[in-house]
Amino acid sequence: MKVAVVGSGVMGLGIAQAFAQENGYEVTLCVVSGKGFDKKRELFEMPLKRQLAKGKITQERFDEITGKVTITGIEGCADCDLIIESAVENLQAKMKLLKQIEDIAKPDALVASNTSSLSITEISGELTRPIIGMHFFNPAAVMKLIEVIPGMTTTPEMVEQVKDIATDIDKVPVEVIEGPGFVVNRLLIPMINEAIGIFEEGLASVEGIDIAMRLGANHRMGPLELGDLIGLDVCLAIMEVMYHETFDAKYRPARLLKKMVRAKQLGQKTGKGFYEYDHGKKIPGTAIDLRVTGE
Image (cartoon, rainbow, N blue to C red; front, side):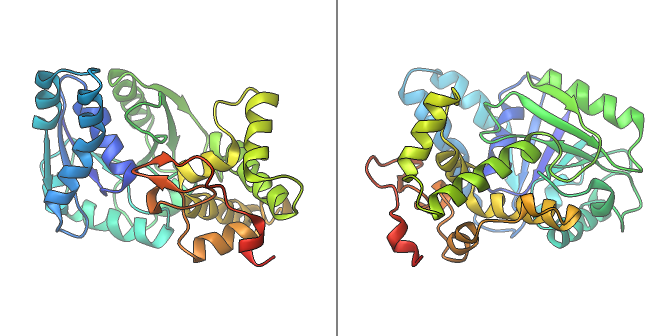
């Protein structure tokens, strides 16, 4: 099966790796801008090179995985059997990109969106073919879950096909009825938002909140560090979707979350969020102080 991942950000790169490291899949990573292919190749290979350096994979395995991936512009999805859109979490951007994909894709291609919160039905509103939600989790090459979300026009056959594909790449599919935030983000992102609110009120430090949730709730990662991993812009986008879909005050984004996104302090991907990072690795002792926020 030929798979195209359209969108080459953190999630797109991870989804491409998730397929490339399994047998039977050829992967086309489509860069929406149509440029910077060498840089995207470098970013795709970076986590695999770390595994190679640590002896977790062999040179032969490295060459096998990277050899399955072709990097092109969006036109590269034209002959693919499965096309996964992985653009920014913005309704208009996804609708525009999926319309481009529809014009290029072959008639029998299965088209999916990696949206983390948006309505599949609304995203597909201007399309003539049905699509389905196929929500991976960061880091996509490692995390086992895929939320499978049918829209109003998604067929039962598409649902079963996506479930089979998920299982085939060693993931666990969970079917979710369409709703804002689906399951994981409906529970997870408000927790991160509340942690930001606790810090904003000055009740505890960044590190104190994260330690409390790791040791008190047995979480592998504290909520603020997790927000940095997901991307604070993504957290904000999901909170705004849930708030505008429900107008429930419990989904109102924290003011500090909005301010940090405006300042481009998005977490790991920008090198600074609630902590500072060097090539994705948290630098100890760099948690932000509330005094720098101007509160």
